Length: 153
Image (cartoon, rainbow, N blue to C red; front, side, top):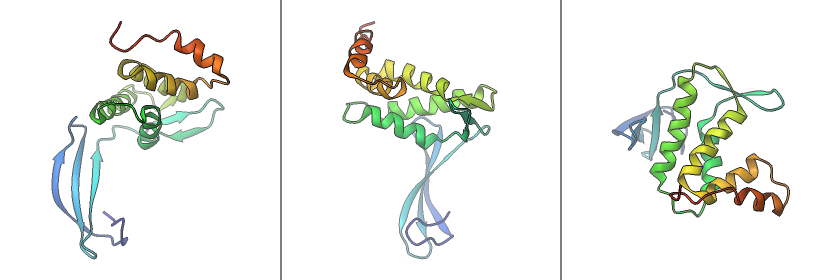
């Protein structure tokens, strides 16, 4: 593994352990050249998934991009990071086990919406505002009127 500090090609694994949800292995590494320590995560990838955008363009599924979009919706909300990780891993697992090599971006957006709806109503509305392309305050008001508080269903 290449060192992120000095770009040396070799590092030594100092510690390995599964993540909380068991979907990845967390490895603590030390660069053999500069001695810097860093963490890597190793995940199972069952198959390559291609995301088909609305205009027809295709791009490789990027777990980090999914995580960033969910993190933005959840910013400054009191949501346990392990619950977010479980949501992201669950969506990735669903995509990989679906048997489909290509997935519409819309389907991924719906999976995120469904997951956030169960986690936090504010994060759900935030994500929806981008996903559904709200254009004015009325769109927020109309959508928020349809949302029930998490746990009140």
